[in-house]
Length: 103
Image (cartoon, rainbow, N blue to C red; front, top):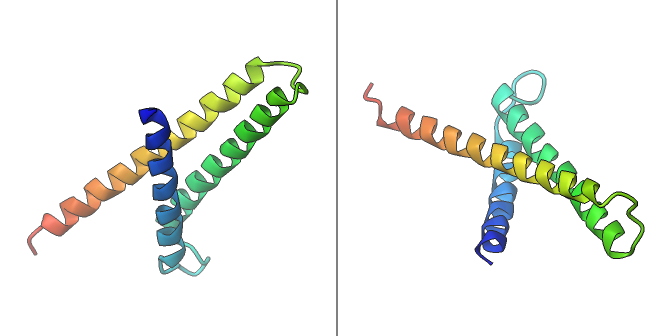
């Protein structure tokens, strides 16, 4: 049960990160390197989530030939989510360090 609650919390944090990435002022190419990294990580989580949901649907309707593909999709989603959360944590730690610096 706590795993489901953690995933729901992570999904809401993903939405917040996506909004923050869109608000970042861009360079000449439209995005800063930092924002593009976060957006690619967010897109990776969305893509792997879509694959996982599709595999779950196919399994539940009996159309999935290889049940191991569902476990693979779930593992990919978990790894992508963990990576994004770690990126967020590292960015927040770096921000905290910068704010504590005396000028």
